[in-house]
Image (cartoon, rainbow, N blue to C red; front, side, top):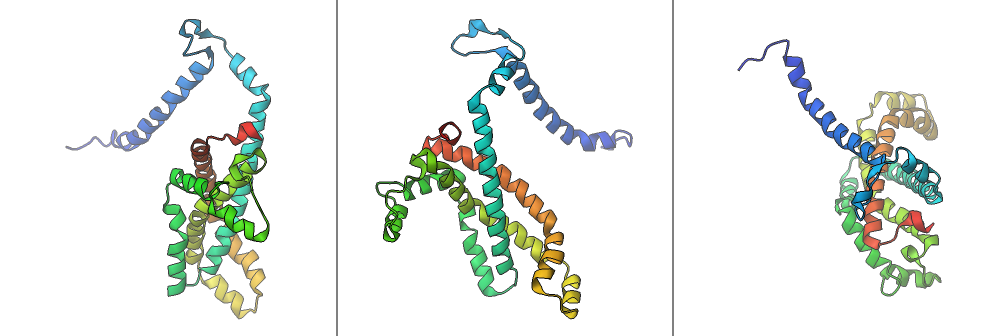
Length: 241
């Protein structure tokens, strides 16, 4: 069946339109309910209170504490994962059999589901029988509280996040490094340019789009892992810090 030429562009954009509709309907539904007093235990009290819910949340100290903790968590996870991922990618940039094997081994944490990773770490850092505390005892660190105390729970979640998602950043940056054109590097070598100059003036600027993509990707992934860890451990960091 032939499609009219005038209708053909609209047919091509139809999937995107359906996705937009699928996104907008829940969004406007959420906005509608946010303007109401809605309690499942007392449905008869349902009614419009307009912006009172927004006033309550923006004047609630726990809301701003949640924002502070989330921004702190996001900042440290992105910075640490980018630095580690870039460092590992630079070490593995040269193609050889050893780097190929190490690359496969380093990707293994990424193959574990975030929910399972959080449960594994929950067992590893258990204060009663966890192997991590046992190993730390050899260097004089006893009874580290990890996720069982508000002072260390944020550090624990950042550590788990870095362990899970650093390989993902490494893969993206390694792909970027191996796709960079060789001509600028060959010209720099002929001119006797120092290695640090090549890195900061050639490699990093050309790698910036990959770094930006990795930053956004790890931000979304870290948010998912934080929620998963909260569910698995039963501890909400935003309400405890």
